[in-house]
Image: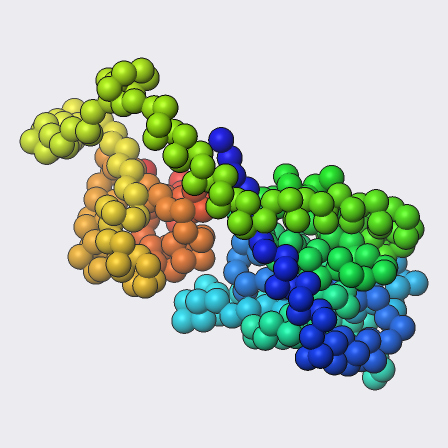
Length: 359
């Protein structure tokens, strides 16, 4: 069974009745009077696709000139792993894109992108959710993306409902796809068309789509998820037996036969054979504590990997579920294969395509 998680919409709906949020909404209405507001709220991370969103907006403003001066993107980029060089480069790249787009399409009276490198307080967040005409999510690879749910919770009491433009690679796409405009974030023209469609969508279609989305977020809350999940665990405990059935023959993994592995390794070299050595990053090359605190592999691990890679008989592969930028920063200078993001990104050894080294 699968149990897609949700949110508790009630705190967002209650917040909209508070004087603090109402004041913020009035301020936003004045600031963006006469303009359509696109909203993006993402962690500043490679998988969130912020550069893809910005390039799609650039394409939109370039190919839908009627919207120039009439639409703004408010992009909140919550800082993430600021000490990692790869993320510093991502931040710099995003800043360059924002400057380029604002410089190309902006005027003294009009700034297309309002970009903030910071997290938001809850009242400000709810006010932004309420004011936005469309929420744009362009994740390249994501979990559920509960920001989409939060946006919808803050649109419930609004007369002119907002539209959700949602990446098909976000987990929420399976739950909310029937009411959202699904896009491939790598296709900037497609995202631009979806933005245009969201801004031009008739009120009746907005209502119809929102009705489906609203029903889902109120029917699949965090509380509902917890009850279903715990209930399923209890049912499995009561009805399953590991002494019979498909699990009865399972046993603990055998200890690695070190002597046999070493003998095979040496025999391969004597016979001029080739060896494929695959190492998982977590638990093999680095312990969990170091992994969680973003400490790179120790120097002795790097030296051993380099020594193994130096043999013409060896091809080395390091696998990880972490981001490509992090793996490339830690091990990118070694002549080995790197596989990041659980296989989504593969990098051969430097010089491999031109026939040099790396196995």
